[in-house]
Length: 128
Image (spheres, rainbow, N blue to C red):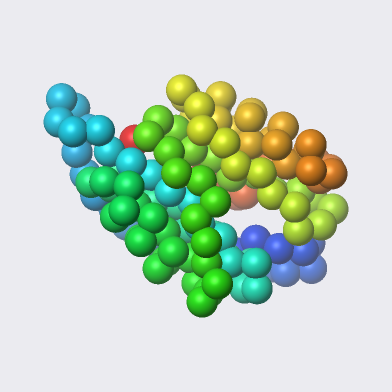
């Protein structure tokens, strides 16, 4: 799980790296992921490989760094977050691979009016 500060270009992009949550994979139960964001602090958190969706959601909200953190994506495959360079615009998406999820998140961000939408450094797309 990673937590990353997002926001306007004037904000410093300082990552706080935390350990991955959950476990599983293999032939066991399907694991889940979530991305949460705080519009006031500009922090985001991504959780993957959580035991179930409620755990993923709760951990993402808890780790994102703001009282107003909300889950903006729940995923069972791969999840990605994309942020615009020009203003606080973001997109999220799920895909069958990390690359597919990131491409879809970039497209979502661009469709909302963002320019130069891309993954946040230190917060790449992740797969369960």
